Image (cartoon, rainbow, N blue to C red):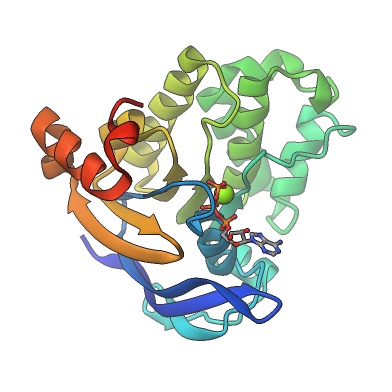
Length: 245
Ligand SMILES: Nc1ncnc2c1ncn2[C@@H]1O[C@H](COP(=O)(O)OP(=O)(O)OP(=O)(O)O)[C@@H](O)[C@H]1O
Ligand SMILES: [Mg+2]
C-alpha cells in the first residue's frame, strides 16, 4: 500500500495558543486510521487543519506526495480530501437532494449524477427522502447524508469527525458497516476520529492515541483486536475508566 497522507510535526491552535503540538502520522491508501482521545485532546483541531479550515503554526501536510500545507479548504476538496465535521453541519433547510448537489458543486454534471447514484445505493434510506428538507431526517439519516455529501466530491481521503456522536447504538453500527463497505469498494482512505473505542477497533487498521494535543502512541489493528491488547492499550492511554466504555 502506498502512503497517501503524511502529517509532519504539525502545531496549530487558536489565538496564538497551541491546541495540537508536533503531531506526526501517516495513512496508507485504502486504510482506516483512527485518532482516539478524550474530550479536548485536539482531534477535531487536527482534522480541521488537514481539511484546510484553520491555519497551522508550523509543520507540514503531505497529500499524494505533494506538500499541501496552507492550501484552502476548497483546493483540498478538489484535490481529494473531504471532511465531515463533528455534528454533521448539513444545511437543514435544503432538501436531501440539494445537499448532495452542494457536495459535488465543482464536479461535471454527468459525474455528479453517477456519484449521486452511488451514494444512494450506499444509503438507500435517503432515496425516498430526496425531496424532504434535511431537518426532517433522523440523526442516523443526517449522518448518512453528511457522509454522502462528502462522497459527492469524489474524495480519496475522507476525514470523519465522530460519526457516532448522538446516534443510537444500532445506527452507529450501520454507519460503521457502511464505512467498511466504502473503504473496500473504493479504496477510500478514512481518518476516523472517535470516542467509541470498541467499534473503532473493528474498522481501523491503525489507531493513534492523542492526549493534551499530542500523539502519545499508536498501534496496529492486530494488537488492538485481541481483548488483552485492547484492555492494556486503552487503560495505558486513558485509564481504567475508559476500558469499561
Ligand atoms: N474555536 C476554538 N477557539 C479556541 N479554542 C478552541 C476552539 N476549538 C477548540 N479549542 C480548544 O482546543 C483544544 C482541542 O480541542 P478539539 O476540539 O480539537 O478537541 P477534541 O479532541 O476534538 O475534543 P472533543 O472530543 O470534545 O470533540 C481544547 O482545549 C479546546 O478548548
Ligand atoms: Mg472534537
